[in-house]
Image (cartoon, rainbow, N blue to C red; front, side, top):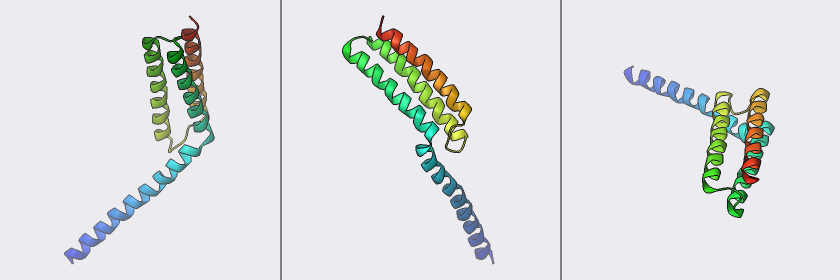
Length: 115
């Protein structure tokens, strides 16, 4: 009887683990393909390219580039935290907020590359 109880408990644990893993797997696929997240990621990539170009052509000092990349990394981490908190996607409000912050960083990149 004890062996049956242990087997039932083990089966319940495996079933609950599977029930948790399936939604997380589908959330991961959703998060990578979600349009709002793709929009934010595309902006991050473009701005990282602008920082790299500024560093290569000398319009950004290594210190300026490091500071801008730190801000970009903070925005990327913020996005990742918000995606995790919302089951694999960004809300419209979070997208607006991230875009607002990306706008400020874009202005700073422009200022630093043109001073």
